[in-house]
Image (cartoon, rainbow, N blue to C red):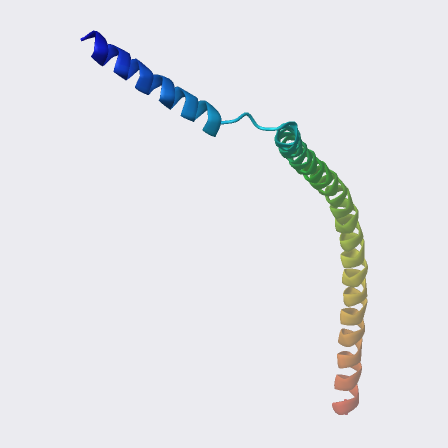
Amino acid sequence: MFCEVTSKLSILDKCQNNCSTSFKPLPNACHDTISFMINLLFHIQRLKKEMVMRVNQVAAEFRKVSNKQMAETTKRTIRENVAINAQLTKMSDKTLEMIAVCTIVRWPSY
């Protein structure tokens, strides 16, 4: 029994030596590269968040300006409609006068 335990212990020691030689720690360059990549990923995520915030800010400003401009456009359109309605009323009155004149000219009274 003691021989079995010693043989198993020697086998485990050999496995441990093999594992320790096959799994060497990474050199400093690899650690630097990994930390650089992690920092780069964090930087990219931060930039994405900043861009989303900036796009939302620009969209809000655009909505505010467009609403203000829409109010001005509506006022201008109403003024133009009033002016056109006045012109149409004058033209309608003139048309009625011309129809009356044409009627008198065609149907002379005897």
